[in-house]
Image (cartoon, rainbow, N blue to C red; front, side, top):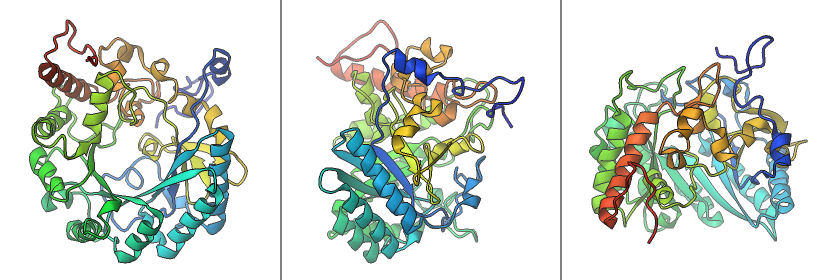
Length: 415
């Protein structure tokens, strides 16, 4: 294990020693939380072998109650709306998440939606979404989501062979056919307006174009490709010790096809965010860029945590020791671990700051930077892949716009 806990005679890993008071005295102000992820159910009906919740460093799910209680839902609703009103936010996002959130059942999800909506009225608008594996997605759930305008995102990793490589049931059976059944119901005429998009984790053994084309068949308004979670202590699968860039190459193959043929029909979030950044705009994704991360997670027992992908780094990395029964969400903003994700380039390593791509890359996804001893102040373990992808997108845009630049990653400017 690393030295992420303060131990006598051992260095404190970044950002443990970050002085939030000094930041405030220098004029920095935290960004209020706008995205709230509610772990309404802590277990899953699949056993995906790459899952950061169940298969990686943090095994805290074993201590969690299976379902978020009504009492915790009520506390959470009040805390969310308290935070919105205190910080004069007219709208917040609430994601029903898990585990697999649909395991909570239609009745319990209805109670969650009703409770949060009632607490928010009349001055706070809540945009609801749910992220599901799609296996249980039927008309009962879809009718409920239609009633509350809940956007539905589904996780699927490509065609049947590619998807079932990892996304299997505990007994080894693949889940693809059940997911397709849920997607067919979601994308039918009655419910298609609820379709938020598809989420796919990159598997280097799957052909990128086959994967992309299989997702296109569902007609998603948006899709995103996630780099598998890993860090410098526990590298992601297929990361070579040499200078090759397998993940960058995999994504570039899809980018070229998408940019040439479907860019005006479907949004690929990672590519779209990189393009925004190359034009000098802010990112709306924590995967790239330097925009403040303003997300909080509520576990089924009511504990407030940071983004759950941090669980891939080490046991307890996402913890805050705060609870919705007693702690307002504003308290989260004073934690060094949260401030570190809101201070932009000040949180980057010297190596990142010396890189021409750092304004666009932003150091990559925060959990992918972890190394025991130095903590999260490192380049992403996918550094070379991100640099190659960003460089390629910049070059393609530059050719399209007839621009030339003296630096390989000079930012494309509008006009």
